[in-house]
Structures are given as C-alpha cells and as structure tokens.
Image (tube, rainbow, N blue to C red; front, side, top):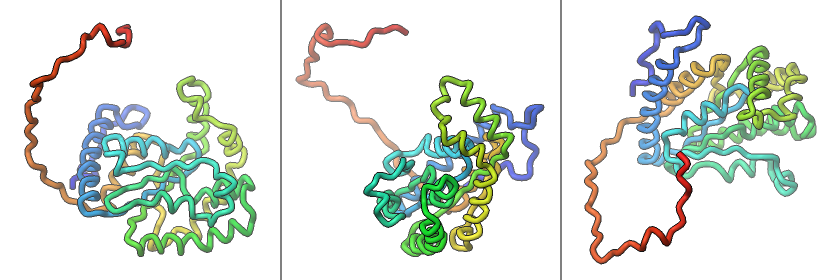
Length: 273
C-alpha cells in the first residue's frame, strides 16, 4: 500500500492555501485505486467493516463518503443514512434499527450519521429524555465493544468545522439552486445552538472516545484536504494486500439464428444532443 506518498512533502497550493485542483484530483484517483484494492481484500478475507461519519451540519461528511464509494461495488460497500425513526422504531431498543444494517462477511458499511444521533441532535433539540440520553452514554461503549468482539472493525470519524466555515457553506447552499435542498430548518437551528452542540460533542467524546473504539477527528475546514486525509487514514486502519486477477478474455458473440426486429417498431428517445 502506498497511501502516504506525500507525507512530509511540500504540496502544491493556491494563493489562498487550498490544494491545487490538478494535484487534488490526481491524489484522489490514486487513493481511490488503493480503496479498490482494500475493498477486494475485505471481500476475499470476509472482513466486516463499519465506518461512522459524524460532525456538524455542512462539515463535509457526505462529500467524503461519495469519494470513498465512488469506485467501489455498491453491493459490498453500502451507505446507510437513516431518516427519522417511525413510531414503531421509537419503541424498540435504541440500537435495534442500526443493528439491522450491520455488515455481513465481506462487506463494508458506511454510516452517514449513526447511533450517535442520540448524543447530538436528539440531546440538543430535546428529541429524547434525559434518562434516554444518559442510558445511551452508559451503554454505547459496551455496545461498540460487543461489535468489535464479534469480529467487526469499527472506525469512527468526527468532522470538525469552524463556525466561520460552516456559515460560508450554509450561505453557499442557500444561494445555489442546485444545492439548496441540502439546507434545512434543522441547519438553521444548529447555527443558533452552536454552543449547545459543542457541549454535547465534548460530553459524547468523554464517554465514547475509548481505547477500543476511539474517535478520529478530521480537520474539515478545507474540503480537499479533509477528503484526502480521511481516505488515507481509512486505508491505514485496515491492512490489505493487492489481489492478483487472471486475464479476462471476452468470448465472441454467437448471433446464429437471431434476426433483429425492425428498428421502426421501437420507440427511441429523441436525440436532442
């Protein structure tokens, strides 16, 4: 594996300090190739991998998930982004609806937000009781230890973004009709409760940043760096080897006995372009 070829080197930057696009896309492609190798190793060795992505709204979680899964087989690398729980799910054991999405052998599951909703948005917005919140903080480390002891590799990322950068990204979403759907009333509320979310994150870390399942914090103010750093770290957390593949020869098509129906009998899409 060669995920850290640039470590310690001076990287090409723009005047504003961002990574240059050409370098960023070249590195992203290189890391994605390594992800494919890791992905094939996970499948062959029947590993079970869970990766959690948490952080403030607009911290860049969705962006890095897209770059990680972009070249991978979606049947093996699945993204789970659960919505608001139903009334039935609210009556279940809290972790129950997440357990249903855990990986089988040879799979990787990426949670775009996870059971940590209880320690974040549910706590701050009052969607859970104090009793439910404290029960979560007490039981979460034990739940994660149980997952790890069952053979699951658990990796947790927290994307850290400053209030200035979050505001910049929110304004960008509001003013862009292609991205306006990303901005919700909950995002507006998260801005007014910045301090409450900070306290909730600190308290969550104090209980769940354990030796067996630590949090890895990604500095996310620079999206390009955050994506490359997170992918590089993910590659380092699951040792893998490149798997050789036999040469594939495409067989010829046997059209004997086939007569194609007249094209005029089919309805084609209008060729505007």
